Length: 431
Image (cartoon, rainbow, N blue to C red; front, top):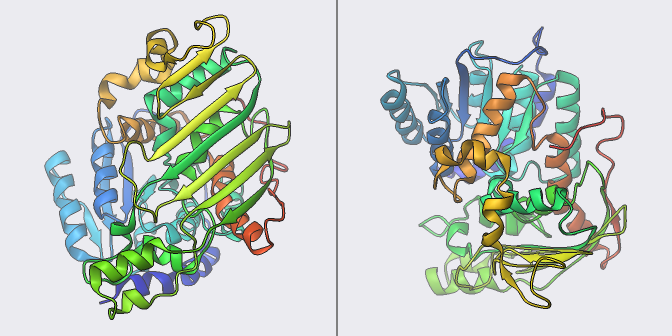
């Protein structure tokens, strides 16, 4: 059975069904408090099972239901829950729309969406309109229409939505955010970020058919996976708090990497070697903020490159500069003149409060503790009834890089304005 085809056909259907769902009464209210939080997981492949494990590490988190189009995966997840909580989850495996049946349960407070990226927005909207809070894997959406659908769903239902962007919780990224907020770098004028990770092996199933990552490179162009790179930079620059992204320009080179890989792995006569790839190997964009800072962002998952770090971050301020993947830092007045320092020497002094609070539990829980921190932040927001630290406005601004870079590329590099997703939204405090 070609599950990728079923998933693609379902994208439009899910959005329509979600829009027609009846909004339950009393979906708004105070936090959950100290009682058990009841979660459903949509999509329990490798990533979904990992997030399930993170949730089971959270005190008082129960998982009554899991859903996947592959029954064996759902059964595996249900057994993981049985070992961790003593009771097996109910499974929903009757095709790509069965998660809608799961959402009708009245014993779920929230759902985790861990399906292929093309489905995140429709499933998240459906969950919120069914009265459930949402933790969504990245990116939040693939189109501007989906971004607006998410904003409307949050504003109309009052449900908590959080993007599960684990890079924002990496220990050093949070240290940098803390240092910036305490003024060590002065005014931020420029940043670089990138997601450069050879993912060609993940673009294909073992038989050579396209996996969801490969399908992205056929159906879309532009920066196809923006949030790992832009998330920590946006948070450090105060985007959606003290500044906002105003516009971007983007360019893309020609597609070479996937075609070469397919021919070498599956043979030149294999159907995968005859695919017409749309997305170029590298997408490069420049973002201008409303207050005049500039961000240089790159995406490339098609080129051969040994892994040192899949992400790159650089922050330049009027008092200093920081480079993540080289662990280098320079601060005027503190560093030796014109001499790089190791950034980790500042960790003890500027450890972020979240790592002081949860660092021992996080350990090396995936992405050097970022996965535990993300799931913990979601649970804490639900208990307190507060907005998620990476809320829907962050999620759609970061995710909108995908359609905006595509639009700029198609227009020959012409500037594209960021929608004002927060127009009319209540003022938010820095988080």
